[in-house]
Length: 148
Image (cartoon, rainbow, N blue to C red; front, side):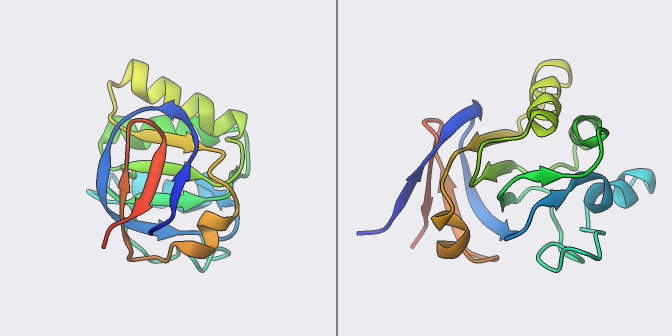
C-alpha cells in the first residue's frame, strides 16, 4: 500500500503532476525574485544557497518544503508571483506554515484569484519519501500521495 500524507488545508485545490522537494527552508525572496523582476514566463529557482531548487523550474509544480525562510517580504513575493501566474501549483509544508507564507497564499487566493494550493503539517517523513521529479496527487482534503 502506498503512503498517503495528510495535512491541514490552508488553500484548497487538487493537483496531479511533478513535485520538487527542498529538504531545507525555502528563501522566497532569493528563490523567486530574479524571475519575477525579469517578468519571466516561469520561475527558475535562483537561490544559490539551496541546491534542491537552484536552477529548477518551479512554475506549475508542487513544491514540497519544510517552511519558508527569509525576510518579511516573503508573503508579498508569493502574492506577486501568483499575480503574474508563474507560481508553483502547490506549496506543501512538512511543518506548520509560517505566517509570511500563509499571508502570501491567502492574499493571492483572495485578491488575485490564484489557484495556488497550500497544505501544511504533512510531517517530516514526506521530505524523505518524495523525490524531485516524482508524480504526486494532491487532494482537496489535504492528502498527498505518490502516483504509480
